[in-house]
Every structure is written in structure tokens, then in C-alpha cells.
Amino acid sequence: AEIDGCEEKIVMNLLKIKEIAFSFFGNTATFAFMEKGNKFDHGQRVANLSKIIREKVLPDDNTHDDILTVSAWFHDCMHNQKDHAQLGAEKTRELLKDELMDDELNEVCRIITLHDRRDLRDESVYLKIQQDADLLDHFGVFEIWIHFAYTINHDMNMKQACDWLLNERPKQDQKFLSELHFDYSKKIYTEKVQFLYKFAKRMSLEVEGNIVTDDI
Image 1 (cartoon, one colour):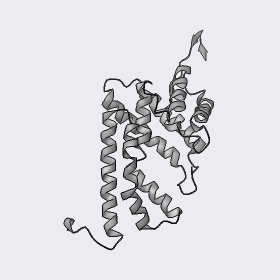
Image 2: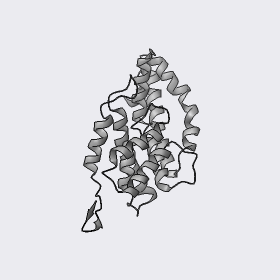
Image 3: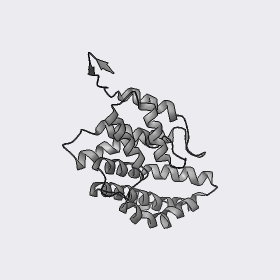
Image 4: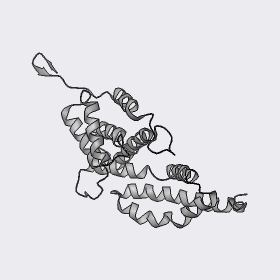
């Protein structure tokens, strides 16, 4: 748009953009065993985690906070489809073409396009922040939530669910740690999995009808 021959700057309206995101996928479920809006809610958490990580690794640079917020909200808007990152970027461009400046929209869409490409070790620090936030949201309390949603839906009992957490889940730790970019992110991951395994050990007692006597 132009006013008196000068280009009008589009001011990012985060409230409106969030409403657009919710309207598009706020009531959809990625899988049959997941709650409606699971990927919309995931995007909200990733946005907050992105800011937390950014404040730690770039404490004096808040210039991309809105970019990270919007890209987090939309990064999985086309999840559960082949090439969901590329399709998500294309859909985001379509939905937000009137809400962002061209350079902002380009950067948002670029982060969405590359958010699963953790092999790109020389990419921008902002992409790395978003990638770490996205990965970290899958652990801790959320991992327990999704694990039980999956196991109940797939006819696994409590003992089977617990055995997987104790015996199979730890085999994935080094892989996930290697995909994180920042030492701070790795510390967050380590704390989350320590909580997970403490929970699983308690669960292994209670599924057999035992109690944690040390806490009484």
C-alpha cells in the first residue's frame, strides 16, 4: 500500500495472526489418538520456548522475536502430509500475505521450510533457535502425555508402556542430543529426560502394586 507516494509499512498484528492460525488448524487433530488442536498448541509452546532460548543465546537481540513467534505458530500447520514443511511455508505465505512485510514473510516461510533440516549446521542462528525449541517441546511432560495417548490407543497396558520408557526410550537420547544446536538446549533436554526416567521408575513400582517408601 502507498500513502502520498510512500510505501505504507505493515505493522505485525500478532493477535490477528494467531486468530488466523487457529481458524486454519486450531480444531484439527494430527492423529486419531491426539486431541483437537494439538499442533496449534504445539506451535504456541514452541513460540515461548524460542523466546526463552533466544534470551539465553542472544540476550541483547530481540529483533527477530516476532518472526520466531509467527514461524513457530505455523511451522506444523500442514503436519501429517508429505513435505509438510514446504507445504506449510506455502500455506503460511497464502494466509499471511496481507499481514507481514515481504521480508518478514520471506523469513518466516524460510524458517518453516527448513525447520526439520537439522543437518544444516551453518544456517542462521534464528533457524537454530526455532529448531531447538521445536525438538525440545516433544520431551518432558508432553512426552508422557503423548506416550500414554499412543499406548492406550494401541492396546498396550501400563506395564508395557512403562517397560518401553525404561528400556527402549533411553536408546534415543544421544540421537536427540546430537540434533540440538546449543549447550543451553542440551541442558533443557537433560533435565526433561531426567524427569521422564524418574517418573518411569516410580511407575515401574506402582504398576506392580508397590510404593515409594523413601518418600513416606
